[in-house]
Amino acid sequence: LYWGGARWGKSYLGASWITMECLTKPWSAWLVWRSELKRLRQTTLVSFFEVFKAWWLTEKQYNYNKVDSVMKFYNGSTIYFVDLGWQPSDPNYDRLGSFGLTWLWIDEAQEVDATARDVLRARFSLLYGKDWYDWKTIPKALYTCNPWPWWIKKDFYVPHKEGWIPEDRVFVQSLVTDNPHIPDEYIE
Image (cartoon, rainbow, N blue to C red; front, side, top):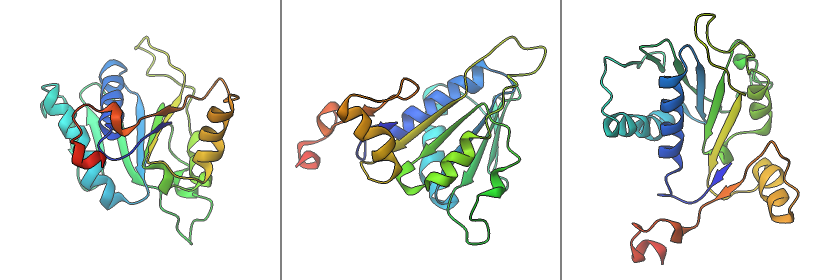
């Protein structure tokens, strides 16, 4: 969990990590979620294009399908952009059941229900890459968020604060003073 305020680089970190993994692990599959697809496209997806520009990636290396909200890379890696908003017609998030994932990232995780998070973690695939690619990884989830209670506080903040966070979790807190480019007016 990467926990911090606005302009702390959470979305840029997520987009950078996913892009690096997609480029180095052919046929990997990512899910990038936020509670609303419209806001995901307006914010999180913009961070991906910022990373692509900074890394000199061109549309020869990736293709973004606006209709399906799917990004495919030249090497077969795929990123699915989906909303995790709660729907009365799907209280158990059954719509997530057919994904086979290598990793996932929930941006603004404080907006997402713990049930959705648990369903997503169950979608990790133990099949790494295709037979002709030699890479293996441990499935991972990245959660980025603003400070907020709910499952984030219970699962990450309190265990970190009390010194008993499980070994399979990491809590990274970013403070306003960690970013040297934030103007004093913003800090105030």
